[in-house]
Length: 145
Image (cartoon, rainbow, N blue to C red; front, top):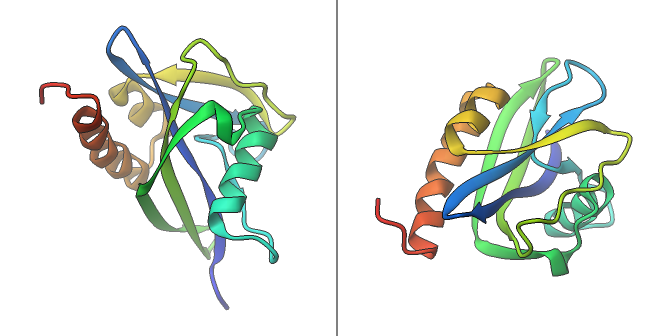
């Protein structure tokens, strides 16, 4: 059986030259923290799914984001013994003061620095993705490494 597919955005904002990542707490299951994402419908592309799910879960539209289509990570993992593939594109929030409007799928959100985001999420594949994309963000914005 083909793995389930999901797509979303790793959204960040810059506040006083600090990179902060958006994580949202699920209102179901083990109440995990993740960026906005969701399952790919049969009639849409991964990218269309990322846009739809981000709008449904966080209230952000494509106009709210600077999306780096060439910067993405594909995560492969197991959920309840079934394979899942998730693609995350990197996206910057244009208005760093604009908070998400949560759907009923999430109970709260946090914007966190890299270390705190990695600790809160708690998954190694997420940690690796954030570490790698954090380097790219610093290049984009000319931060010293």
